[in-house]
Image 1: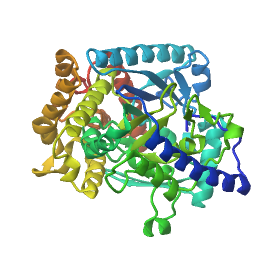
Image 2: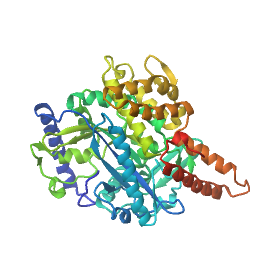
Image 3: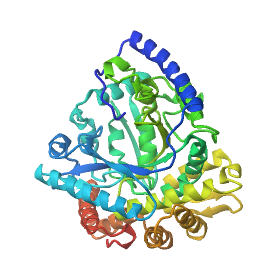
Image 4: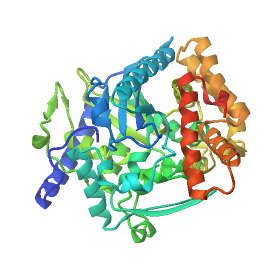
Length: 495
């Protein structure tokens, strides 16, 4: 969905032609995968989505003003209160992780400078606690670009009904929207791992196996529209906000477009084939209208397959890039929320890259001992209860995720990072943060919930409950941004 489209509406003829060419692209990808060389080696990278807030800590619909002051590494997102940073790829070995942290920090400072010049500020958080129904029901919530209008129209047309957000945690939320506005509240960090085709399946399977541990340790979205819901509410909100299924289609077993998947894979082709066979195209933009060349050097651009792939939101997504000399493949882990600080983000990245390396080197891989439905159930449990979740793990059974990480997974991630030739002191720094979260039980979500409770507990009980929560959320964000500005990891933050 990163590419622009030329229109926000499409004809039945355009849709029929697109589907035909989509299947042709799938066959072209299969041939290229079997017969042509792909880029070897590996690299890492990330995309980071950010929120804009005003002096009252409310969403600031000013991304056009902010982006006008920034360069090509910064892009729009669907919400007019969002921007995105695209960090260039680098090697994880040596001091690569430190370079990544420094790169994120520098780009955040640049973005915040542009935001302040436009009269707002940058907030790096999974979901803005101060977001309201009123903002999301005002048409100005959306960045005015065809690709976003077209996506929203396509989802609503496929669904044929209003979008329903229904979620219960400590509190409950039931609300309907006329478009996909709630999707814009879900800001994430997306980790990229370039791998050769022969390693892709193992890397994807490993990513799925550890998804629950990632979400639990990195949760940072416990508040949506002012309610205390799941520790990582962003995950169910994102799924529901662009769900093209009505309740009867859900009951029939139709697959959701925001998808964990349903099986371990043996090839990257499995994922692209499932995307084509299970999901109707939402944005049937032709190659000619998009201005995309059929070939990129010696490699097919696969316009139809790539555009369609961008509208199936797997939590672990396959990426095909035609590259320059040889095409390459990337695993994109999309399940982590933005924030709280650059060092927290890189600690999460270190845990992910270390675990993937360790698990793919095992003689008897974890996905041969963990049922896929168990991995999915773990993922949902981790999103609901965060660092307090209990999940299933081979040879151990049910275990608290914090204990699992501290006693088992963190040491494995350390070994994996050592296999990747990461500098010893950086392994200690970043894995030390993950282990400290596990020991203290503090991540972004628990910090937000604890701080909100203390703020509300210190206010007058005679205050109107709605006004009390609104004022408390504003103060919460002020404290969050003050702590974020220190750059210190979230487990050390003061309330």
